[in-house]
Image 1 (cartoon, rainbow, N blue to C red):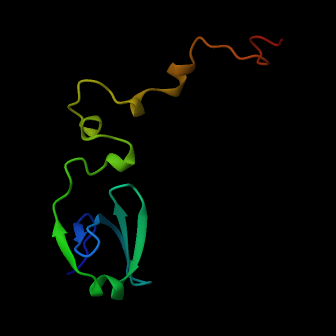
Image 2 (cartoon, rainbow, N blue to C red):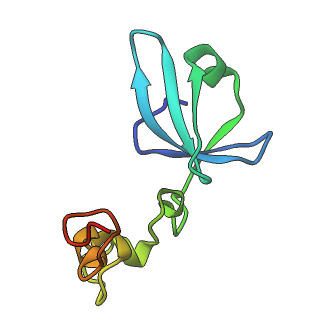
Length: 103
């Protein structure tokens, strides 16, 4: 079974589900990302020796990246927290020791 970037697989022995995120032809490795966000690397020979099956992408495949499917959707009615400006959160605050309040 050939790895393709963006494809999802299940390791039939461990039950882990992961996505292929990169293929390094020079070093003959396959980089994968698991559902919890951790990234791993497998040598091509190890990939071939594993009992793998293609898998459908989980419903909330990018939850490990800190965003739910709703937050990633451009149709979402509310902007997610990643869209809020840091400056908006600081507006109106003053900090001791700054030019605004030297004492």
